[in-house]
Image 1 (cartoon, rainbow, N blue to C red):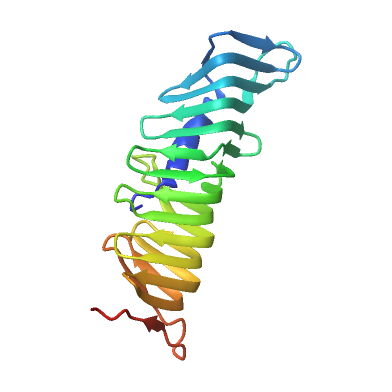
Image 2 (image 1 turned 135 degrees about the vertical axis):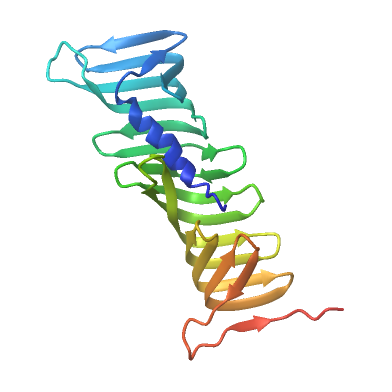
Length: 255
């Protein structure tokens, strides 16, 4: 998770944002232009491409805004229904439905589960994954699971990822932090850690955890309200939340 699975949301949906023009749509069955409704519908293994981004689905629909009733304008919304697959040079995404509303600055991927995959890192969410391009924020909801190339696994009911712009030369965005909430659990080679909430800082590889924390390291149990897990070393440690508060532990006797 050092490179952070949640960063994949930015890769996929930032590319999707570019689809407001010069988008190419094909389908095995038909492509329809609905003049009055100002939309294009592609049916049957539909494929939409823009630069290095490809979106595939059973049905793709593009909605337009135009000052003239008899002319196409710019795309204001794109939906994909059934067997949704998105791919760019850096990542792939899978789901049942995609709804990208440019006017609302919101792209929602749902599925059973919705999934982002780079080949070395994955993130899945049973409810939905939502990306807000202009806010540089992504939210994954519903039994979210993130797994990195080292098999470190992070579980939570909700993950909120915040991005920041890179250098003007690269024009890339990097992951700044990820907040995790409810039923938080981290599994590494050395320990299993549970907590109510936490914050992942990808630049340092640290996950800071808060409230109702339990660290289980080979049967040794630590409990408290503040802890840190270092994904680089795999070491988890309990920290006193205040000078007057003591940390608690039960250590298993070696036989």
